[in-house]
Image (tube, rainbow, N blue to C red; front, side):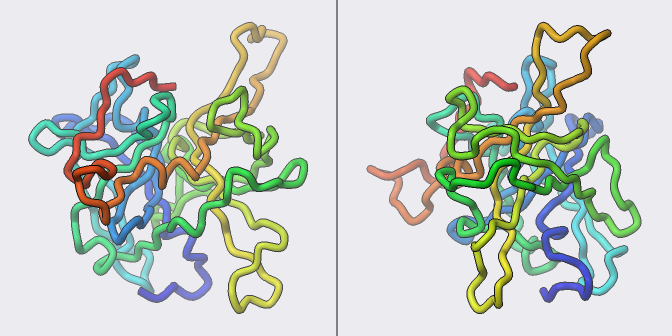
Length: 273
């Protein structure tokens, strides 16, 4: 589908997620679409789909998609089951059990053809080894406390800066820090930036939006005095390079290759942030 006039297609990569269990509404969060090996996934934080520490066990996600390219008020609802015959339908990183992100398989073949959906792809991801200037500006798009443009079904854009050295995983974990005041409901939001000198093909001096990470949660210190000290206003963002590492390679045969599309992504022993 073509892009609506005056609306950046970044808006159509991101959706508000509502979690449900047994038909009962539980929480809201943020997610974004990612296309890999011609299969569509919804990327979000892992604690959105399972959070044993707080007894959060949804069985379904609901998202609202634009259905008309010229009238953003028109939409349709998509229900995404998290389990099929008791088997989880999401993937998590096989080598980093603490990574707070998942890829939920979208098995409806009509999502891309029948809706205004613009997924990220692997070439949108910025390399973890990229050296960025001090205080690199980024945008984080999502649904803080569920708040958004309900008429046009569009997310909120928050400005932030990278607060740690991007090429160096913070404290050895595969995430970096952002400096911004964010809220519940932003979990799973994409962290994006325009990188100086990173031009799109045939683009006269412009640059494309690059996907740097996935916002997961606020970061605070355990010894903060709630009377004297304000919150740090720092947040964790898991490297976007983890996405392709955790997705199945559907071009490889099951034997001797990575897990196939129907394998069970393990959720045992999950340590959710």
